[in-house]
Length: 259
Image (cartoon, rainbow, N blue to C red; front, side, top):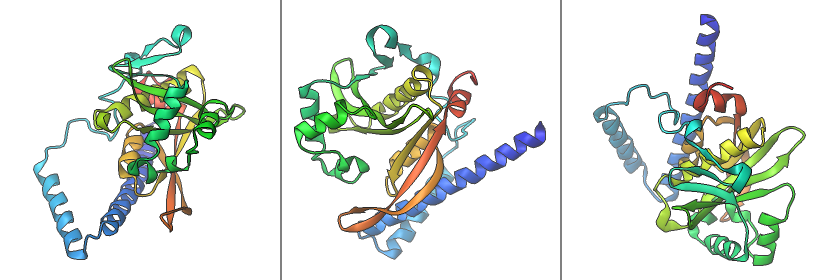
């Protein structure tokens, strides 16, 4: 048993190193895109090292959100209200023309245009059909303090046979960003897929420079599955796309009772 645990621990370290290598490469590319010169990049590296040396690492930090989230904290009203609640955030099925209009407005933002969400239809009728009327998709409204629609999260490529789906999400209301809403809604959606639908796997695709998204998902247990080189063209330039996946067994081991 000790030998098996040691092997698993070594594999986890290898996977973590892969993620860190990708994040470092992505960070470097972002700096270059912003016009930062080589000497300044070295200066940034030195400052990062200074922060590491000054900061005391938290106890029991294994790189996951285990200290912040537990499945038992979720208020499950799905059977009666089709609603899942965690703290000040809840998700419920996306519906209504007003919600579609709001999402359409969000899609015009520059921040969204730098993500894979940019490929959503822009015209209202097409967007409505895409989000609400396609069997292989199911989207939820992300609401804050019961009433504020602040984003959407949902499933694409729903595969009932193999019990897996692709997750997509974004917080569109800029005034509500950086409040932890993205984390809370992600945790609720993972619960929906694994505990309500009883699916086995969730996977995501992320732009190679979307460091925040890569980091957030890895802390929920997502692991790198591969890199799709030059997968999309953005602003006339080919961009790599990362694929990450999370299994139900790992989700419950990290955040539940090891179901």
